View (cartoon, rainbow, N blue to C red):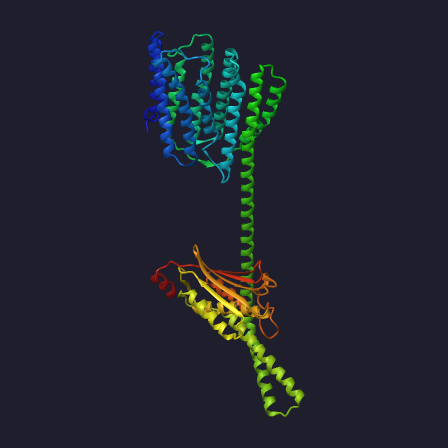
Length: 583
């Protein structure tokens, strides 16, 4: 892009300013020149407002807020200019001093100040945006308070034109100076297109700030009139801002992560804190040292009390939102810690099962040989030899213990030799129903009630039906054994779909788990000797892990144990499932 095309809007702004200056120089002081100057400035302000508003509609996130605030500041400026057009163009009257729209002129810079302090070039962290808004609102409220405390009493409470003009000019100059300072900081701490935008705004604001002080002196000397050369910098400022807004559409306005130096990050909150602390100081000055009329003193004290109430509410809101953000952060940290702890437990458990599987796979075969010999020789001894009653009793104990050891070895081999198996689409609701009915029918006491609840939209999963059936049988049987210990109770089984996974809950009203952390450890059991090996739930854990799922257990607050199984749901087509199964 050629330099002429790249800077075409600024060239146009310079041309508009030059044309206005030529008319002002060539025309004598007259009512027509006054109207021309007022309308010329109003048209430029409305054009700048339209461009900023159009930018706000097309930009994302914080950039939209930036341009909306810029548009609001220019609109307030245009409202003041429109009042001049009405007075000098339609009513043919001079603008009074003080003028009601001087208040609007004073506050037109506040939204622009907020737009720059909003720093759309910096990406704020989550939760910081609301605090930033509250800080800006506090500073805006403090600025309104300053005008009401310093200028307004001499404008309307106790009219004093000299003091009004003096205080208004000084406070307005301070406002423009602070705006320029914030823009200098923005230029120094930004980059790319945003630095260019802030630099152009800084130049325009600097021109306007210097000219406003000169114009105020000319007004005090009665040498200013609409259409004089004092209006040329005003037109240049408006045209410059409009050209910047138009050119910004072609600049690369990228927001980057918040990387300000630590002292600059705290600038706005510290200014807000100083604003709050200044209120009681100004209130004491108004009550004890102010030499103004009683009406002015009363108004100032009332203004301080009102500002303390409003800004105090902002402080309360900011603290409230900070507390909420802190609580949310603590909850998130706790969830992350629990998730990490759960993952660590799962990894340890998985390593335990893998190591144990490798160990028992080799040891079980070696144990079987002497065990079979014990069984064989015991039976031969029992068959061919005449033994006394005591000897028969001891031999029966040897055989029973050998058989129990054989069962244990069989369980070990089954545990160690678990294979993934073929997986197909499985209806878990049907498996749960079969497992619960089978085990419930084995217990004739009727003291145990099993309730099964399966969601109507419960999906099928890709799994090995036999392995999951055995896993469900093991969990349900353990729950029923626990209920037998307390003379009965209820077992509630539910199956639900939550997001991308299915969740199965087994909740009983039994005595609960003695040590939930060790439930899935191999050989851990609370059953009497000879009734359990402690490998059932360990095998269940391995099956669920093989299906890319999770199983957890805990004691319910109201009593009883809760086992939860999470398995990935599937939305795959039958062809995809068949392909996965074939692979």
